[in-house]
Length: 65
Image 1 (cartoon, rainbow, N blue to C red):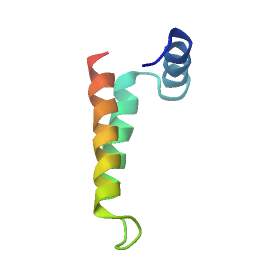
Image 2 (tube, rainbow, N blue to C red):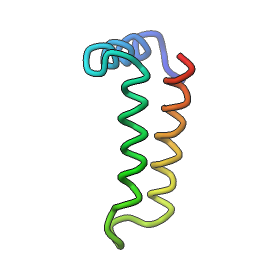
Image 3 (cartoon, helix red, strand yellow):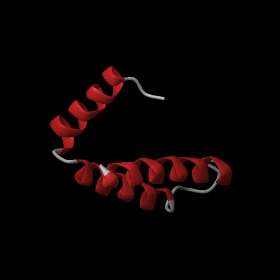
Image 4 (cartoon, rainbow, N blue to C red):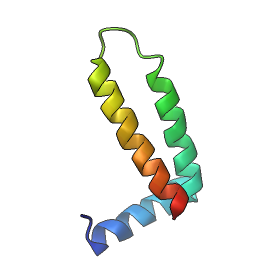
């Protein structure tokens, strides 16, 4: 679980670099799409799926903020 300082820092990063949580969510959606074009044998299928799942979880939270 994140503490208040971590949440404040994350909020500051989002605001300073992306402007809004929605903008960051859009970039993360693009990152998920890019995972489909990774060359074979670079990462295992399980590793790619775990990364995509993690990113999608963050996107869901950002969009609900």
